[in-house]
Length: 86
Image (cartoon, rainbow, N blue to C red; front, side, top):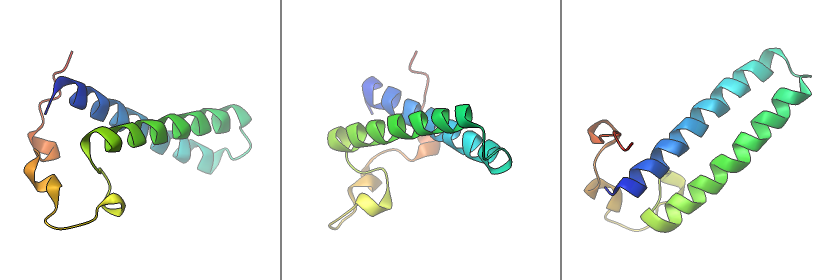
């Protein structure tokens, strides 16, 4: 896995975490417009990064896979990736 691929994957994971956190906050503060705007901007960036990653390196989500055999089994599993990219 290249340094660029690891960096992109790490950024996707960071936005995913931020989306979960803002979603949880909005569950209890549904009228907080600032939080909603933040969540929406994170969501947009997350989707852009996913599209970029999948265009360059293949699918990350099972809903984007087609054909057999599954190509993702040739890559390292998430727990096997060394994210020391900086």
